[in-house]
Length: 277
Ligand SMILES: NC(=O)c1ccc[n+]([C@@H]2O[C@H](COP(=O)([O-])OP(=O)(O)OC[C@H]3O[C@@H](n4cnc5c(N)ncnc54)[C@H](OP(=O)(O)O)[C@@H]3O)[C@@H](O)[C@H]2O)c1
Image 1 (cartoon, rainbow, N blue to C red):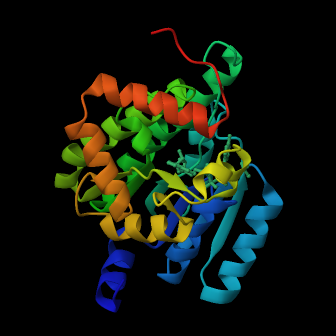
Image 2: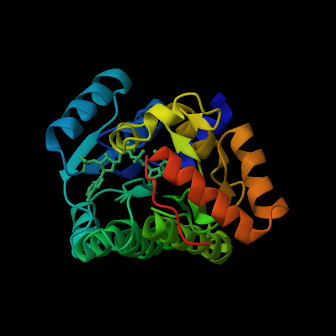
């Protein structure tokens, strides 16, 4: 980002940014790049030591202020707590990166886990968008970045509930983009394919993804997403991903694309289970 755009970014989205899901991977990349732009950071995730280590590094390197809040974003009062605990500072940017990403046959996974996935991926970001959207609207400027996924565009076997939460995120962000821009608030959904994060590595799919041209680093995804804020309702980081996304959404018949995604998911996660024709 050039110096003029960085200054404009600070003015519009500063002086504080809140990154939910900041202790690792993509969330840490967002925090690092926002600190380099001169924004103060509220860092949120469950693991306090990781948040503290990142906060210390950002303070030393970028001379910004930091605040860490160790919190489970699936708990019902998470958004209200974040609102209360930042009431004394001027937050201008909300980045919701945290996710619960269940992988496996829908019926084999525990119902409580599906419900927690809804809480982390849908309820809390929606409530934060409402709470912080009101704060940003009152001061007539601000930004909201919500992490969706390429999986938002059609149902994918083995991640049916996860994909549905990301579809919710996409549609919420698109609607809010149109609704809030007249009030100076920019909303953006990011739709990456795969990112080389610790979260993705833990899912067991990384070996298959390593040679995949659609896999991007967290740094690239954060950079392209931050650059896209204020320029439209969605961003698809990565040129190859844009092409793949166009092909799947606009060229392939939807049923064929769903079946193809099912085959890809079973290969990626080593499941032999095939549906009956
Ligand atoms: N990785 C991919 O391939 C990929 C592809 C498409 C879209 N995305 C999207 O990109 C975003 C980043 O995903 P990622 O898996 O790669 O994650 P990541 O950025 O590497 O890490 C996820 C962050 O969320 C935090 N988190 C998870 N559950 C939480 C909870 N219940 N409460 C508080 N914090 C929580 C984790 O910290 P703690 O463990 O310390 O809580 C961590 O800081 C997600 O929204 C995901 O849907 C990822």
